[in-house]
Image (cartoon, rainbow, N blue to C red; front, side):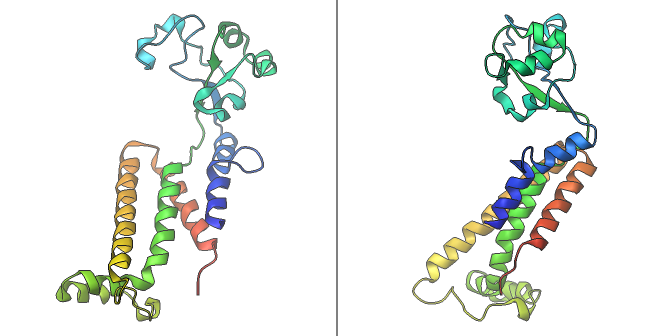
Length: 220
């Protein structure tokens, strides 16, 4: 429950905009029309900014943050007419039909992927750590398991061995699934690190994830 609260506060809602959006706007980020948003009456057939002729693309003018908080569905004039009255005159006049969608520009965009992948991995590994020694002994050759088990402090090992007895097969399968899931998340984290966000944004996402994990209550 607390981990879900931490995740929601960071990425979904924190008495209004989530923490990541508050950091973004406080560091200079502004909401502007999406680069693939075209003027009313014209379409963007390839869903890419280069496919819409420049005269038919929305001007890069600041709009209300609510357009970015609304996500990909955007906001139409029928839904929130007051927002269009307060929006840049050129943008408001050119949004004749459909919805206006926003995108963040500038500011420090904390990597939400880095945050959730690291926090989720730490939470699962924390639950598995007491049983990793027994798991390795159950599924790996003795020589290999001995070298891995030696790295796990005895103070962290559980006295109960769930990998023996009638439910050994189910315990091994469940642990293997969780470890595979963590491996998939780490692969996704590598891809996020290579192709998205700046190093500072990835570092801040990782830092917030580790701090959140440290602050969460620990089991006995």
